Amino acid sequence: MSPQTQRIQFAHGFRGSLTLPGDKSISHRYAMLAGLAEGTSHLSNFSTGADPHSTLACMEALGAQVVRTEERTVTITGVGGSFRQPTAPLDCGNSGSTMRMLSGLIAPHPHTFTLIGDASLSQRPMERIRKPLEQFFAGGQGSINLSDGHAPVVIHGGPLSGMSFDALIPSAQVKTAVLFAGLQATGLTTLTEKIRTRDHTEHALRAFGAALTRSGETLSISGPQTLHAINATVPGDLSSAAFFLCAALLFPDSHLVLDALGMNPTRAALLDVVTALGARMKVLSVEEQHGELIGTIQVNADPVPRSRSQQPLEISGALTAQLIDELPILAAIAPYTASGIRVRDAKELRVKESDRIDLIARNLRAMGATLTEVEDGLDVPGNQRLHGAEIDAGGDHRIAMAFAVAALRAHGDSLILGAEHAAVSFPEFFTHLNTLSLR
Ligand code: S3P
Image (cartoon, rainbow, N blue to C red):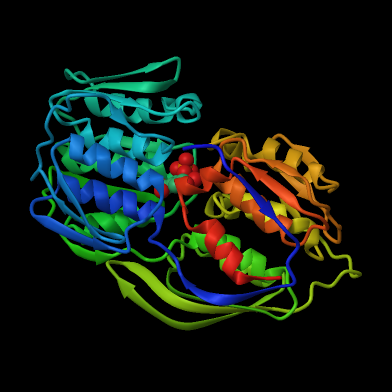
């Protein structure tokens, strides 16, 4: 990726309609399960982001056949249950999802795997997957080794025995690693999550033919089970849509229609929050495919009230976990809202692709905003006026996109340094932002 700077100017409105590329989380899961399954899966509207393409490259290295047939369509012929020994380290790029979820998928296979990543991924915590995988290996020949809690992740695969795991950190990636391993382990695996995280893995496993159950906070899966190929369309990515939904909120008379959008209830808290901040939202249609809800929504916003001061909108507890990828954009636009926001229980934001709390605070201050940063969150008051600034994306796709949206309402131009990182999840972002912004 060559470094890129994007200049963002003040906009007067935000209007248009769009179909978003496929959801990043679902694309990863479909790619991994299709790679393990028997038969050929056809996946349309696959994510265009670099991260799910890192997963596809890993699946090829593990023996799956991947054909990228036309734009956003991918055909994957799986290995029918047996991955091969890769000839080189599995390169996960910037993708924590690839590294963590794939570790669970490959652990039962009798090879040695080394998973590597870029500089950002190599600093992210991996102990959270080592612990449960060690439990699966209990007493057997397999092992998993890290370098001081980080990548490279070296897995000596071997037979797994079902086990019980209490998820202390709310993480869908860790849950997925456990369920993918449990699928191939002998006996019963249970996982208890106190805070419910996105449930794409549960839907995807069922779509590929696996049986698993949920009772309250506990998921149960018995192994080993075999998977069968599917034909599926990946729903549009709601976390990518979030940037445009929040942009629409900032302009009087805005109008945005998004179709074929993923509206899974464990991801859709954003729609409530954007409504609470002043948008008017209509669901024009909704249907279910492979357990996932896909719909068309229309969003309009009224002028942002400047005078009323209200209680800040509170995002904490389980809501924080559901909005974890949308917190950068919500915080970046919070100064323009009437109420502002108060975010708590968001310590996980400090170990994402960057320390997002620190970068949000630094970039908002560069734009002239007043805010308070705490260890696990931020207080960003509303009713503020911002000016254009040089924004440091810090190598983080969501920071680059969040501040490009904030810059639309700032007085004076902004420069987004590191804009190329948007390609990690949403390469078309700046093109769409330009088309939808009225100048
Ligand atoms: C993801 C889970 C979340 C999220 C990430 C994608 C997933 O990470 O931030 O962008 O696809 O399961 P954690 O599991 O670390 O919370």
